[in-house]
Structure formats: structure tokens, C-alpha cells
Image (cartoon, rainbow, N blue to C red; front, side, top):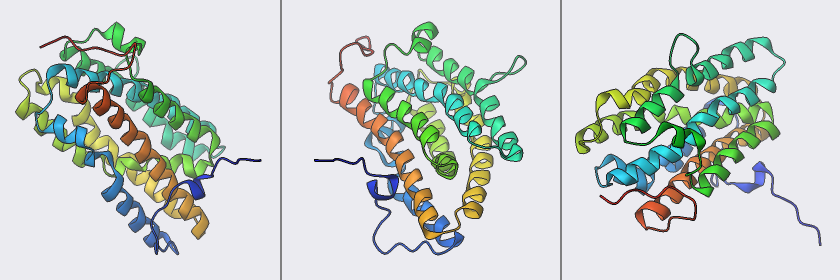
Length: 259
């Protein structure tokens, strides 16, 4: 008996009756995906932003999320490698600089380490990624592989979760500063910076898919790429909830100190 791994076209469903006849319908479908699937809806985020977690649980979230943040430049380098078009490479290149920084300025990874350090985590331990959850590692690596193996159009489309990020960042900044006495504005600098960076990145990616997804089939690929990315984000929160809210921490993962 032969088994086939389903393609992105068949692995997900953007919903019955969704029409993708032109760029306007594509954009409407993408926003619907964000409204129904973005990880801002996850129960773990409700707990995090509502002040319902203890310090150890917040540490676990920041520790695991570091692996995602630190892998973004690798993903973006993979995307750049898919394009012979110089203009696209130049446009995408600043994303790596935003996260890696350079000799004269800090990047997003530095700002995330400022967050984890401010939460009381040792930076060497965070950077080692030894304590992250298995699901975190699998999900993030799957994202890199997606950008390597799928079409360049799908690789760019998978970044479109940035369309919905600014509202989440605003909610996170206000909620965490309001509810946690161990959080201060300085360690939240990553999210403040992304309030400007994410819309710029999302606008380019949206314009790109609107222009280059020229058939209903390609527009469906774009939608399914975004659904895949929302799943990558969602499953990381599933794992955090299972481990640190329900208390099923897997062997080798970070164990918070008792409060």
C-alpha cells in the first residue's frame, strides 16, 4: 500500500465557499484566517496578558519563544536563498538585520535576551536552548523546512502573520506591565520595536502575494501557507499550556523554581 503526505493544497482548508478569484478576495481570505486562527486567540495568551501566570510560567514562555525568535534570521536567510531577483533579496535582507543587529546596534534577539534576563533567566542557558519543549523545537524547525521546500511564493506568504502582530504586541505590553510586578518597560523593548517593524514587513509581503499569486490555485497556496504558519505558532502555545499550566513538563525541559 502506498501512502502520500498531503500537499499544502489538501492538508488544510480555508473554508467552504471561499472565493479566490482576484487579489481583493485573496486579501479578504487572509484577514479571515488571521481573525479565526491567529495565536492571539489561544488560552495561554489570555492567561499571560491577563496576569494569571506566575513568574515561572512567564519564564517558560520567554525561554521557549527565544528559540523561535533566534531562528527567524535562519528562516529569512532561507527565503532570500530562494530568489534570484536582487530587489526582493535586498528588501528581505533588513529582516535579518532587524533580528541579528550589527556591530553598532542591538537587534531583536538582543532585546529578547534582555527580556529573559529581566525575568531572571541565565542568558547562557537561554541561548543554549537546552530547556525548551520538544514541540517548540519541532514546530520552529518545521517552519524553516517549509521555507526551504515550498515555493518562494509560499515562503513569503508564511510570514503574513505579521499582519496581525501589532495588536497582539500592544495587548502584551499593556497587559504584562499592568499585571506583573517583575516586568518593567525596559525589558519589553522587543515588542515596542516590532510595533513599527511588523507593519512594514507585512505590507511588503502582502503586496508581493497580491501581485504574484495570479491564479486561484496560487492564491490557495498563499492561504494555506498562512494557515501553516498560524499552526506553527499555535502548537507552541499548546505545548506551553500542557507543560506549564496543566503541569506535564517533559523530561529535560525547563522546570521553574517554586514560588
